[in-house]
Amino acid sequence: MRVNEFLDIAGNYLQEDFSTSPVWTKDELLGCVRQVYRQFCVLTGLVDKTEIRLINGTTGEADVPKDFESLYFAQHEQRHLDIVKLDELDFVSGTWLGGTTGTPNAVSVIGSGDNAAVRYVPVPSSVWAGGSDSTLDMTAVYLTGGGNQYLVDVVDGILRTTLAVGADNYPVIASPSGNRFMLLVTTNGELHTFAMPVGTAVDYVGLTDASSDLIWELTCTDSGELVTTPEYAHIGLATAALIDNATYQDFDTEYGIVVDMYADGSTTSPAYVGRVNSSRGLSLYAYTSDEAGMLWYKGALPELGSLYSELKLSSGFLPVILHGVLSLAYAHNGDGRDPQKAELLSQVFIAECEAIKRGFEFRWA
Amino acid sequence: MLVSQIVTNIQNTLEDDGVYATDAFVLDVVNNGYKLIAALTMFDERRGTVSVSGARNMVYMPQVSSAEMLGPAYVANTSTGNRVSPARLEEFELHLAEWEGQVDSADTMYYTMLAPYHNSESMLWCMPVPSTGSVGLTIVGPCIPVDLVATDTPRLPEEYQDLLYYYGLFGCYVAEPQRAEDAVGAYKVFVERTNQLIEQLKSRFPSWQGFRPSPVEFKYTTIMRYQQKQAAQTKGAEVEENESK
Image 1 (cartoon, rainbow over the protein chains, first blue to last red):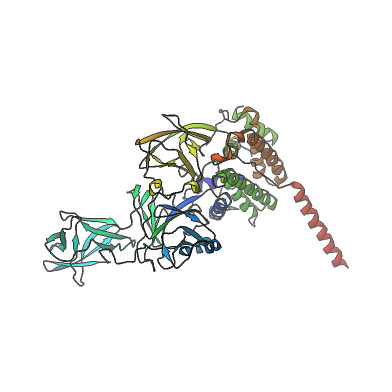
Image 2 (cartoon, rainbow over the protein chains, first blue to last red):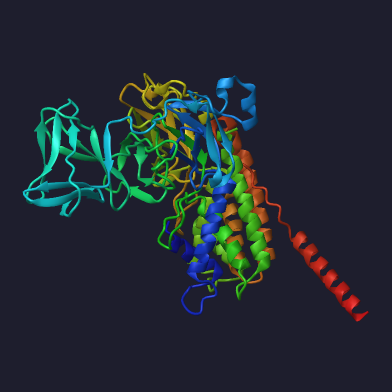
């Protein structure tokens, strides 16, 4: 149900049609819904989420998603890790201490909320140190063909060439079988490849998308055809990925099972963090590469952006949200204020959330 | 009992023949109560099916006749009848990579339930992945029923259909000015009757199945409000007395 429809129902209780000199406006009530929505998540603990996070190769720590509440399951390289208290680490063998490296056996959470960090012990020894794979990462490639110089870049996932001036570079890309192809451009700006018998080649050219910061890998097939694929690949049913904490990559047209995902960048100073379905649902199962861990955590439902956002809750739980929203509305300082009802509905809301929490908490007992 | 009779009973108690407590509004309130009761008591158990394959060892909870299933109370292999047992996520010791969704087995044996806040997000994680390609699972579990219309009969047990009356009264009192104490009274009876229904049903949901209905502990009393009012009046009188001195 959309927030707008939900507020029409709330309006019926408040005897508010939101049209003529309203006591409550929909914008005010939207604020109430946002608050109650978040409270519901915390009070019931029903919102389970997973995300893949990059592990810092020096500290062995991964940061947590913005809606992180508590960690209940952790994986590294597909293995389940024990979640331990920080002080328990002293009582195990020395290899468990932070600062040593090896295969992580446990994780410990330090801090709270989105300031928390998940510490892997020992620090994974197999983290990617950067630069060891054969790539050429750049924001743009300049090529000259027939006297015209072109910029080759990627915008919104589309590989394009535009007339521009810059320092020429002609990357040579190796195909899966080891054939070498140099990237060239025609006078009209059409990209093509030219087979090279010898020379140093890279596995792919990484081009940063000008609009999303997503890196696209430019690779060659054995017959020299150019292919662009996003560097961040995923496993699981993904609807979106959050790149570098800021940009969502939606899978509107590529919705489906994701095949692999790993966070990339320098492990001591992560340049990019890939987050599958951050705040947008649950990814299914995931492989985690050497430098990334999979966190299963209690989180929150996606932020409600506007009146047209979807209240992603079972219809059985919406009356509970309604009680919470009416409670805040009646507490509102104005003509419709009714502190007795506000107090009553607040207690009703909390009692119902607690009953739901107790009902489902056996999953974790 | 027909829903229209429940609506009429509510309007009669309010001595309102549909002027303020209109048929449409009261029906809306009754439907809210109906869904809330389903979520709290899990009374509406139904049978659904899902398909688990190697590519998708996580499956969404099904809908049964448009009713969203909240969670599984019983899961079995549809063709062999073998029971699929519930397990908690932390019981899956994933020290073998194969357990992460790749291992083949003749049959899936365990499931764990995740994210039960919405039917389209709530999932069963089934392990190991069946080697037979795709396996159908039969699930019996509580659902959230679809909206009632005036001519429907609720799926609640007949002796508990008064729950809808009490919730309806509560909702209508919440909508009327200065009726908070009446709302408290109606909600208390609603909670009491809800908890009686939960008591009757909860034996169907042993704790190891992952969830079971839990009583609502509603602590608000009108006496508390009355005492607060009295205390405020007493304090006010003391202030006046001090000021007069």
